[in-house]
Length: 469
Image 1 (spheres, rainbow, N blue to C red):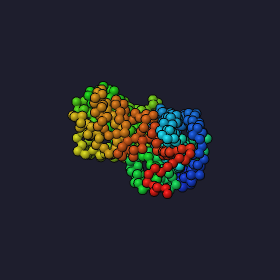
Image 2: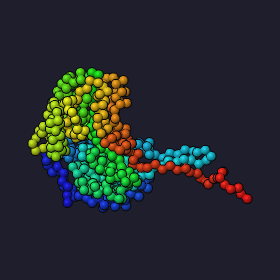
Image 3: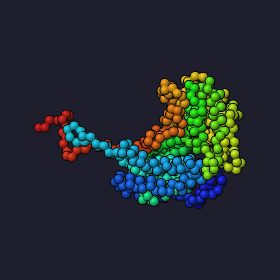
């Protein structure tokens, strides 16, 4: 049995890859794990630095494959490859800071030592929007900590996953230590439910993340890290520069065709700024080039991942219009047989009910507000809590926003998708389970072991004993 992958922008077949067996891959990783775990950290670091070199050497081929398989513009695919390379150095620093060895001398002799142990075999389930960068953000810190990994890429981007794993093996990471599991939902469920994994690191939809959370609820011995998504708000207040505000909103809403967990999905704007902001926003949106990854001139936005995703977005758009949303810019299919969609804007101010869904594509919802407290209420009216931005010249307003907003990433005059790998990345509510990734991934890739230690035995029991005769 094989799994086929196609270019979203053209429909061309990229590859047909053999579907794997979860139990077999876990068994291979289990057999290889001990040797990797007992290797000195310096050896694991050397392998991963070589991995970064391999990726750098293969950067053009890697970026081309990512662009073909996801449909994202080539310029954006190249940026993704750069983040794969950069992850190694950042993770080495984080490993030392977050999970390094510590010891302190104790009164009356001895010391208190802190060390970290790997969990064992970790499953990694990757998404399709960043099919190299996001799983790599789990795999690198997991390997540094001494774990073996079974990685199942999204069934929509398996070729990129295979390329990534081949780079690890080319760098000398033992083949048993990083295993590739090709397959669809059945293989993902088999991997997540396998008794011999010690944990699962997941990036993907809230629906799947919630199912995993329920599945692992009775398995406290297994680590579970969930990064799920967001219905991320942007508040625009206090008369900022309208053209600059529009540019930040466009970057937030339409980069990667809106297929980012941190994408700006909702704008709440001060009512007196609504008309000038919408003028600037629609003028800029109308200039965006939508096309294939290798088109010239280069597009800002490529297709969504496949026709099923496009159909789902079009249905959700029409549903909101039927519920009372006004169309500022329609969501249109630019090619009848391909998932190329126009950037869309809906005014949801007069909707009695606003569905709290993550519309994973180029659909932006705008609402007006006359009061900042109401704007905060609207921004927080979501089960998600990943990213939020304030566009305003006022520091006092930002302090009010930072204190009142529910999100794990809070930005000021920056896009919602402006997140640094040198900081923790994660959210609350339906956006995650308090296991932030990026710089804090070291926290869930190993567990701390505290030890009271002394070179010799010296102990007495001073109270509670019958006197010696």
